[in-house]
Image 1: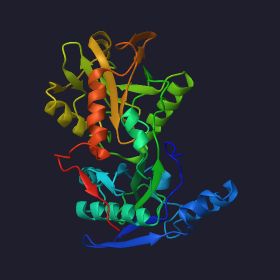
Image 2: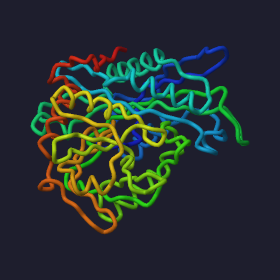
Image 3: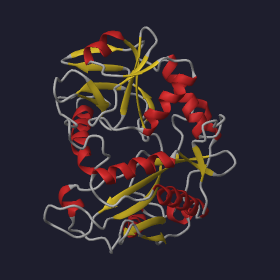
Image 4: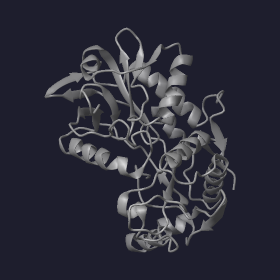
Length: 365
C-alpha cells in the first residue's frame, strides 16, 4: 500500500545541467531495477539496495552551496492514474513557472518552463511504461479519492561544488518520482498555532526554497508531538494574522458564506492548489476574498477551515487551538463546502469530472 512520502524512487529520472548561454545538457536515465513485481517480492534488505542505487547521483558533488547552506529550490506535483490506464499530470506548467520564479529569486540561471513540462511528462511516461506507477482503483471513488494513490514528482536544484557563501551559476535540475498515498490519514484534523516564524518580510518566503522548510518541519513535528495534525503560522510583525499551515495554504469559510484565504505577499507561498481552489470556488458561486485574516476573526467567525497543497490536496481542519483556547468548526467533521470543493478537484484530477480548464496533461514516454 502506498504511503505518504517515501524514498522509494522509481527507475526513470531526469538530470539537467546548466552550461552556458541558457543551454541545458539533459539526460533521461533509467536507474537499476527489476520488474515492479520482482522488486515487491524482495526482502527489505534487498529492496533497500535498489533504493540506494536509485538515490545515487555520483556526478553531483557532496560539498556545495545546497548541502552547506540550503541554497536551492524545489517543486512538488502529482500525476494521477486514470480509469483508461493512463496517467495525467495536474498543472505542470504552473509548477514550471513557479520554479522559474524561485530560481530567478535565488539569482541562478532559470530552468525553462517548456523543458520542465517536457521532462516531467516524459519521466512519468517512462516509469509508467516500466510498470512503476499506481493503477486506478474504483474503490477510491467511495470516499471521493481521499485515500487515492498518485505519483509524486519532485524536481529540485542542486548547485555546483563550493563551500564559501556564493550564488549557484551552474546548477543541476533533477527530477525523481515516487508512488504516494494519502498525506494526511483520517482520525486527527486538529491544528494549533505556533510561536515559530515561517518567513519575514523582504525575505525568501515567496520562494519554494530549501531553507524555508526547516522552521515548517520543526513546527509541524512539535505540533504532532502535542497531539495535533497541523501547525499554523502567524505573521512575524504583529503575530495576529494567519499566513500558512506548516507546508500548505489555508482557507476559512466564514459564517456569512465568504471563503477567505490569506493574501499572497513575500511571506506566503503561491500555492497551485490554492490558485485552483479559488477558481473552483468562484465557478461554484462561492464569494472569495484574498486578504489578511486574523486568528481572532478566524476563531470567532469561521464555520469551515481547510488546508490546500500538492501533498494535502484539500484537507479539512476540525479545530484550531490558540493561546490554550480551542475552537471546533461545525461539528468537527468536514463541512459541506469543503467536501464539495474536494469532490470537484479530485474528480478532475482522477478523470471522473470534465476538465474544462485544461489542467490535466497526459504523460508520454
